[in-house]
Each structure stands twice: as C-alpha cells, then as structure tokens.
Image (cartoon, rainbow, N blue to C red; front, side, top):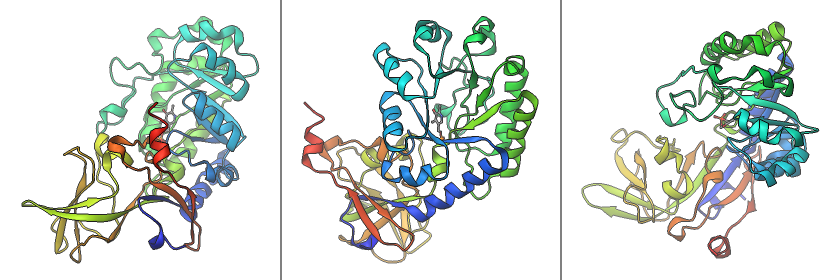
Length: 373
Ligand SMILES: *Cc1c(COP(=O)(O)O)cnc(C)c1O
C-alpha cells in the first residue's frame, strides 16, 4: 500500500529515515565506545524495536511499564529513572533493569536493601541552565525537583553508587553539553573518580544536520579519559527525529474571516506538544501564511476552540477529501495520544525504504471505551 492509500488519521513511521538516524548514533558508539539507549518516552513504537536494537544498546524507561516494554520487545540493556518509585514496582524493576537511577537519597535509603543485581545511580542537578526557549523542559530551573544539587549531595552514600545521571538538555547541540559537563565536573568531579559510569541523559539532537558530532565525541572521550567512566547517552528525539508522519484528511472548510480546515486529526489529541511546547509542525507542500496563494488555519473536530495546529498556505484551494502530511510526527506523538471528545486514535503504519506501507495497528471504539471503566 502507498502512503496515499492509508485510512486516516494514521501515523506512518519512515523506516528508511529511522535507520539513517540509527546509523549516525551507531557511528558515535563505534567512535567512542559509549553506550546509547532509546528513551522510550519519546518513541515506544515497539514494532521498530528489533531494528533499533540492531544499532544501539538498549532502552531506558520512566517507570515499570516502559521498563517491561523495553525488556519484552528489545531485550537488551535496560535502564530506569523515576523521580520516585513505588515499593511494588521496585521489586519488579530490579529484575527487569540493569541500571536503576534514583532522584533522591531518601529513595535510595528506602530501597537500598532490595537492589541486588542492578547497578545503582543517582540523578544530579548541575544547576546549569543552557536554554531559555522551553522553560517547562528545564530541570535546572530554581526549585527543580529533578536531581540532587551539589549542596544536597551526601558523600556517605558513594559506596552504594556505581554512577551518576544527569538530564538537562532539550533539543540542544553539543556546545550546551560541553557547558553542562564543565558544571558537572566542577561540582561533582571528585565523586566521579570513585564511580564507574556517567549517564548524560537525553536532549542531544545528534541526528539533526547542524549537530556537532565531533564535539560530542570529544566530550565523551574527555569524561572517559579523565575519570575512567563508561558513558551512556539516552536520546529519545534523536532516534526517531523526522522519521514519521501524521496523515490526515480535510473534512470541511469553515469560513469566518479566516478559512479553517477541519481535519480528522487534532493537536490536543494526536500532537499535544504542538500546544504544550508550543510549536508549528512542518507540513508537506505548504508554506508560511501568505507565502503561497491559499492560506488556511488547520484545526480539528474537538470542542476545544484552541485546538489549532497552525496557519499554513498552499498552492491550490483545499477541499474536503484532500490529504495532509504532517512531518516529524514519530516522536512525542503516539506516546501522548488521548481520546478527548471520543476522538479516534490514529492507526500506525510502517513505510519501508521503497515507500511501501503496512498497517501494524488499528484502533476502534473498544479502545476508547475500555479505558473509561
Ligand atoms: C526525556 C528524557 C530523555 C530523552 O530526552 P529527548 O529530549 O527525547 O532526547 C532521556 N532521559 C531522561 C531522564 C528524560 O527525562
């Protein structure tokens, strides 16, 4: 089946593009000896886990469910970090995970006696904000709950720890990683000498064309050589960046001073980051408002007046039945889906390198109903 023939709404994973990203990540691994894990919270489309597992080292999870998924579907190295763990979950997590990262010494104290068989780390907060654009994604902001600051670090726990973890970047280049590492070394350098690994989290936009991979590799080597550490990276976005589409159909055109296309996809339900981040998703064959002759506001069937994806222009007049292709829709999209207003969940298809598509998952009324009681 070709992409034009898919029933809408539908996410389409572009396997060729995914594999290109994976090859870039594999090269970083090969050049440096670091390990790279998929942060499943960005992309958990496990139909692709066998492919991903051929290039990188495994998975990382935000809790029990993702940890199980990683173990069951990729079955390679499996890590977990959560701001706090529930007791029942810890018992399962120690069996599923090679690394468990804690967010506080109180959590470590609580669980220290049941952590046999897993390598234990603590998340640090280097208090080094490197971005202003997305304040809700800055774990270094004053008062942050994420990670232990140097002031609150308890040296007496070092014998229980094998590594440190930080995650402070979001869609950033390696110059910001370098700045962050300078802060990590200044504040935590004496501890690093006693540990065996450092996990540098996600937010590394490694597969973006302007990303400075050479500087990333220099940073990795510096930490390896100075402290004798094994380095982990756990990107989410970079794994599936630009590797998916959301295909939607125009259902109606509404006129009220502005021409609005009513789509069968929704920002609120199917691409919530568009409203949360916020950002304007790239759309195939479109321009900025006014750039091409026909400008429309793109919206959906929900009751939310602000369920607006953005304003776009086109070469021709748009009509019901036309299909639109949102791009970069593999990451932080299907993992955040909801059925607000009873909106149907988009199906999931995989497009191979030749452009042939196969549907791997379809949803229906039961998927909506089953979650509600
Ligand atoms: C979100 C997150 C990641 C992945 O971040 P990306 O921006 O998708 O690369 C990795 N590690 C932790 C702890 C995270 O919270």
